Amino acid sequence: MYKTIIMVLLLIVFAGCPSSSKKTVDTKGVPVTLLGLLPKHSEEKPIEETPPDKIPSFEQNRAYKEVDGFPDYIIGVGDIVTISMLKTAGQESVDIKIPPNGLVSFAFLDNVPVVGKTTTEVSSTIAKSLEAYVKRPRIIVSVRDYGSKKVFLLGEVGRIEGLPRSGPGVYPLTGKTTLLNMLISIGGHTPKADLTRVELTREGKIYYLNLYKMLTQTAEGMDIILENKDRVIIPELPTFKEEKFVTQRIYVLGEVTTPGLIEAKTELTMLEAITKAGGVKLNAAKSRARIVRGDIRNPEVIPIDLRKLIDESDLSLNIKLQNGDVIYIPTTFLGKFSNTFTQMLPILNAFLYPAIYRDLYTTGGEGFFNTGPRAGIGGGGVSGTQTGSVKP
Image 1 (tube, rainbow, N blue to C red):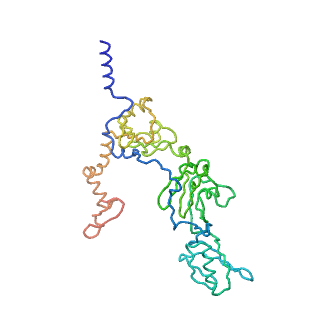
Image 2: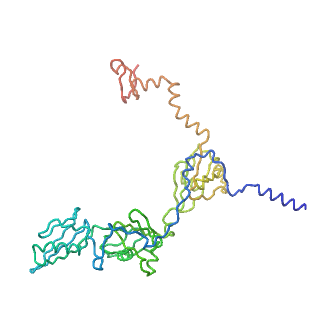
Image 3: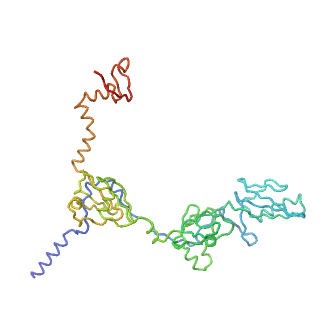
């Protein structure tokens, strides 16, 4: 019975003792602005993959349409088309850049609308209109330079030496083009590519594609047909992202030589961070330093005695810092008084030594107002930045 009572008492004692692993104290004494440096609570939703057949298509952005069962390019502003007319003596051809109004002239025809029509449709329109002037005209319309419809392929896009156009960039659409066909034709993807999180932006909305599935599965409808102004971004794998970015961002603020943000690719200790900030100043309250840590919703303030760490070489206080930590070193009372006294000193001197300030600011010294004889009638002139001494 006696042993049972002792065990119960011990459990009560240990249960009532606060955990020493989390040195949380009141945030009193820590400027509120420092809490704003802590990371915000993440509310991002997980990425949802969009099946290709669920991504909408916009007619005004399409690069082709079916004509007699075959995809035919749709002509737009900025394209350069070649219009050829076959004759007995040979072939008459002319290159025309489609103007903003979408109208072209050829042979006996003026203001022929071509924008929004396929090459086959424009050939038929011109041939039919020329029948009034030419017997059985034979017209061929082809695109020499594609400039009206473009897609952006960015991120981990591979480059091929010797290929005129490869790697990340802007590419023209030349007709019915799928994402995989376009990617393969310009260099494929790099070894760092995260194919499971490819980002497609279309008409202001972002869709996430699994390009890995498209490459490994042969099911119909897995690929996506590109449209004008599509933007495709192939991201890096997370492992490569971690190598590029810094692993720690530490703020050292207060009474240090160079306060501000410290970035490092390795873990930093307290001493290393203080050293990178140029060391503490003489008026630093070293025993009242703080580490502000955690989320902005639940900040944790850890006291750290820099006096023991630096002056007494107590390396047990040289703790490892965490990403996002904010180190704050306040000013001593004497330091605050010294700063205030320095600001008040010119005012006090004006009362204690009025003759000096009178000569400096009113009799031709370095001040602004000169009330001496040289100031002119009335003695109220302005002397600007005159220098020199006043003769008795």
